Amino acid sequence: MKTLKFTFTLLMITMAATVFAQGGKYETAMQKALASLDSAETSAGFIGTANQFERISAVAAKEWLPAYYAAYSNLLAGLVTADNRQKDQLLDKALLEIGQAETLSPDNSEIWTVKGYVQFMKMSIDPMSRMALMSAANTSLEKAKTLDPANPRPWFVQGQNTFYTPEAFGGGKKAAKTMLENAGAKYAAVKTTAALMPAWGEKRCLTLLSQCK
Image (tube, rainbow, N blue to C red):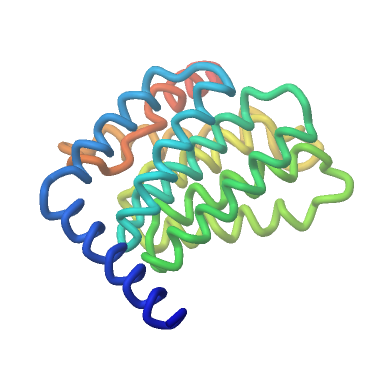
């Protein structure tokens, strides 16, 4: 009886996901969540947006974008959170969610970019004890660049990471400039971005680049 009940529940979830996707509700829900992401400014706002994407991901279980944006939203929530303990928790959640996206789309430049971004930010909370994450972040970003050489975001994230890394450790504005210039050129070369696909980073890239001159 329990097996029959489980099978029925699984069937209903599968049917709901199919109807959700075929009825255009997925795109509508994603567009609404992306609008919330664009307008969010506070940790609470980004967490709320992450919750929206998590709900979409639970229904559209075969789509990688909801988990990707949930991770990105929690990353942004962490960036604007002052408390390091809460920041760490948000970044841990982001790592789990980007891992879910990676399972659905393993060789995806966008996913590896966010993974590297989160890894670097976790390292920055306690650099002395987390230097291994610096290497992991660079590995993720290099993989992202290899998977899609035209993608500007891994170059931007790597440049931003370098910008805020002390010169004594190989960072600083001078070291970041070439990376940010490469990112800027790749952003400029993007003609159109497909609906729902990642398009973040250009404005921040240009701001940092202007500070390197």
